[in-house]
Length: 94
Image 1: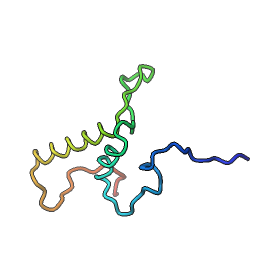
Image 2 (image 1 turned 90 degrees about the horizontal axis):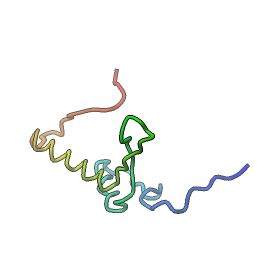
Image 3 (image 1 turned 90 degrees about the vertical axis):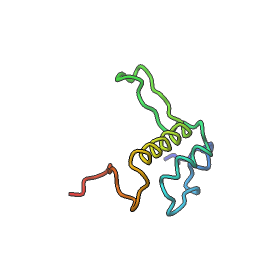
Image 4 (image 1 turned 180 degrees about the vertical axis):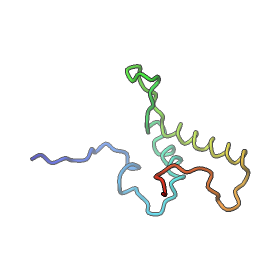
């Protein structure tokens, strides 16, 4: 049986040794944008036909989008008082 070895060219920011317990997840996009700004984090289809190709979203683009959405919400809703929840995406709590 062959042994699977992890790739050696993975940037350190993506390695398990870079994990920080208790790190706030909203800081991760900015950290990735600083460490690997041009690294594609995900892609979406250009059209409803995958054969037409995909658009890559880099770490820097994603961080800018998160920051713009945050500023938009702050402008729209004002400064939070008690960190109220404005949306939830996850499993149902039923």
